[in-house]
Image (cartoon, rainbow, N blue to C red; front, top):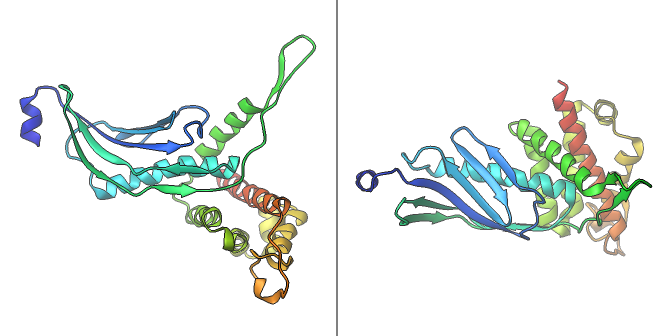
Length: 259
């Protein structure tokens, strides 16, 4: 392939390409620069452009890039609670004359969570915007995504993200997976009291997660076998648990920023 590219003059562009849905899942274009590539996510398309055409990215490199892309969507998922689907990333080499080589496409990835609240724009008597929830949410999401990427090698953060992903992929055991996040924080800080103090979590937050996940007679309960009569978790209960876990993840990221 190397000799072929030389014969056609300019070097080809090597890319990984994929898609995601819904196409407006990411509200603004996301650009992430890696050590030797640039990721762009926008309008339903994922493009990863490598800065050199040779050698081609191997399987380990492609897997690492895919993990970086997934972190963008995971950050969005934790904050927005929206469902999303991502296709496999296909390796392509584009030549200046329009030809292209296509290699491999990985499997797709699906995640599910509840839908978000509508946006609100509040203006003052002079017509100036006082509050724009969409703009505020986008700014908060950028900050959260940057935190996730900044601490991407932290093993505990990886464990919490894995548990969160399992919670949205496996609703029947959702409470078990979300409770795991509280549990790993308790062990990380040496106890319940220590974890709450280090992360600034309230007793209400900590106890609500435990009560809903452990004690309520719901089908998703961690101890559902001990409840002879069970019901599905209400939307309010699920929303509360997700909100508490989201708060725990963000509090842990803030903690990492200050150590």
